[in-house]
Image 1: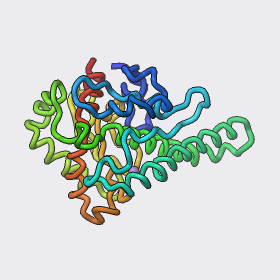
Image 2 (image 1 turned 180 degrees about the vertical axis):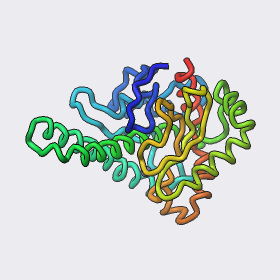
Image 3 (image 1 turned 180 degrees about the horizontal axis):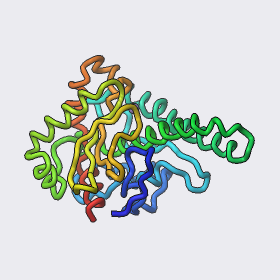
Length: 260
Ligand code: MN
């Protein structure tokens, strides 16, 4: 597999540096029919998150559009949460990442004291990781009417059976891991290139607790901002509901790309 994983970005992998069938589409193009196709089961391609997250011409991070309406994941994830989460929280990570890049450029130009490198590297790591994590999050969910929920098929299904014994045991472990993250963080299904197996990991906040080179296939955001409006302190209920909106077609396509 090819991989340009960097230390601070907790959800990298082939989806960031491989072309997919969506590779020719920029964020603007995706506002059209491509989004309508998104989430259909069968013959999926992995979302080209790189094109959605970074503007090559401007040299800055950009906010990907949601690939469905704000209310599309109801009743599992509520409209207001989706609106605030995408438009304010995710947008904030994008702004924070670009600010950190700009400040580091000033330091390199001698306009700002080099003592601030530590501060801005930390901010960059946090915000870029948040940007990547949320981008994967939106694009690995789908309304139940467009293929969300159910269970994976094909190679990913076989790998889950191999590495977690069965689908039911995978679900139990994934929900348990996500539900028991201490404080803010994420539960992930990732591909471990060292063992060539799937692993479930917990990450704290936005940053990298994943193994280096691991390919994040699926993540559930368990920061309170992801669920508190509807679920309050019932995080386990939210994680259980999340299972109903997983776009296994997209996750499976990312796995297929990883293994190709
Ligand atoms: Mn979030």
